[in-house]
Image (tube, rainbow, N blue to C red; front, side, top):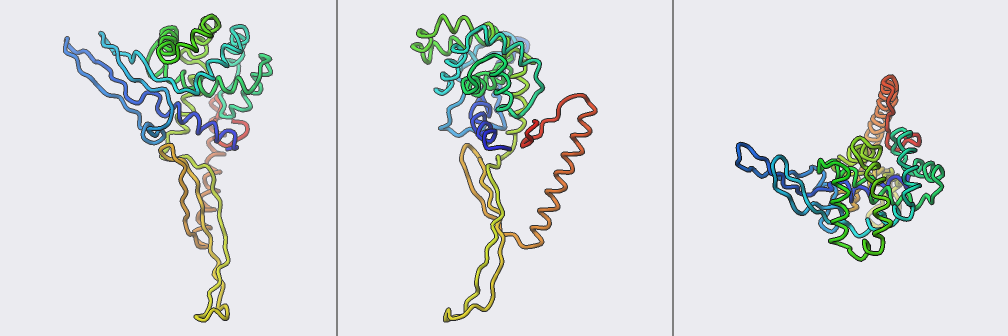
Length: 295
């Protein structure tokens, strides 16, 4: 996976894992209410207490399933909202029509570049809208099980509660783009499917940021440090990874047989990917392989 897409996964982990920290759902059975707390297995894996994220904080009680009626909006999301209003309803409408012709992909940087050229807008602005609004909010709407118009209305109310000055300054423009935003984050939309793909990608205890094998030559001295009796060749697997919103590092000492086993497992893993790609191609749907340029 390229550095750009690794950065995207880290940013989206903040928003996607898990956008609803704890949603209270009121279930009614013969008139007696039972309250259930839904928690995501990704919540503890990727979202630390200090990370900004879309966070459900309240509930609505009614017949059927209760819906969270407000959620905290991370500060950097307002840059994404500003990106949407700056793009404008006409170009966003063109985006909604164009994006549905695209195959699902993990190469969002390439996708952004193509779409930005198609709708004649700045790729960096579109990228911000994707990362902080369209992808995470598509997933959040799905978790709330709300129709897109109702969710966008809820979003507008949440913006008003948490940053009324932004809404006052952009109200007319925001109202002009919300009908298109509804189309972009509606059920089975491209961005909802992309949100699901990224959640599956992040549904792991840790995400590797970098790894390398370090090989060193270490001398074995005599007691008086006057001569070298031997040289020890050592190998160390250094892995940098993200866990619970923190960057961590681990070093594993490997001998020659360990390296050979590692090589065998890597080759075996690549063969599995190639085989599955061939099998998926028969199903007439794209195969998404993290780290592949064509994904």
